Length: 149
Ligand SMILES: [Zn+2]
Image (spheres, rainbow, N blue to C red):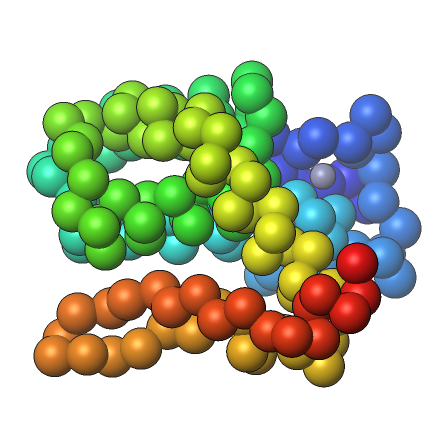
């Protein structure tokens, strides 16, 4: 089967049926399908929460981040949530890159990723709280974490 993702990152577009994700009549590599889905989530989140923009510009900015830098779609989603939650300045979608490049954000993301790997502490690290309609990220360091490194 051929992966139908326009931005397929695999050298070979071929994907075994048993390794593929089927969506309608299309087949995708698992990671391609995931990127495609998270990308839709990024678009929806941006449109809903950040300054009005043309969808073409938004897609272009996201594609540059994912295909040229490259950042993971999950990281870009994390960044735009951070921009919204913390009321950071953003004038247009190309501004996302500025926050993606920021060293402390990359560091924070790496830390979250490493922590997620330890299943037993997974849910204690990043919690999303609903507080008077405001979504906040809370960072909860865990003692176990220190034991593990
Ligand atoms: Zn693919």
